[in-house]
Image (tube, rainbow, N blue to C red; front, top):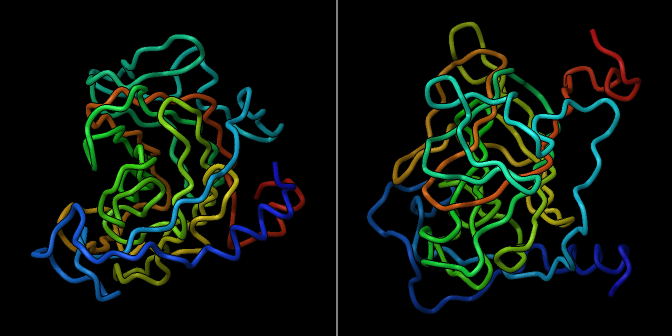
Length: 273
């Protein structure tokens, strides 16, 4: 196994490499054009190169002492869902999507650091967006895609860790189906002027299975399917939503740290306003 330093060097060396495509893959060519020059879910957009992230963690990664534990494998009391209750199946320390609808946190968050562990079904069933599909939405609207992207071609802006419909990850860091994956995410909420204009877009840094796949990447707006994102002013805090896309994706060990990224010295000191 390579050392953490050599693995980091490998990632940095190939983080901008893209898999060449001579033929269109899954996706569309008739959707609106993003500012980047690609169609939303563009079938011709190069897919990120796959990078082996190494073995899955043997056990859930412990939460820091200052974290808020949202799910520890015992109950989903921190979440709400259909009929004001998160109804996903809980067993073996994880919660599994079971077609009872999305769930979201009862508490609301702005700037934050979020840790989530997830696993897609094994054996794998389906292909492209029909295989191990779920998602994590900040403010219930800014998605980081969850998908079985292990040897599963799909459109670049829809694969695992993509800012869905907007920006692909730098690399495809997926482990095989059934293995636990980790997302460590720093999310900076958008800032709006009094008149509703976007003063600063939402921004995100994502580490997938220990590999940097987004660095301070701006969202073009809330997540949309086959259409352009468009900001609409909203509150300074919102819920975190987990998507029920119909596939029995599993989640475990979800924790969050509230941040104030306008006043980072408070984060360093571990204090609050």
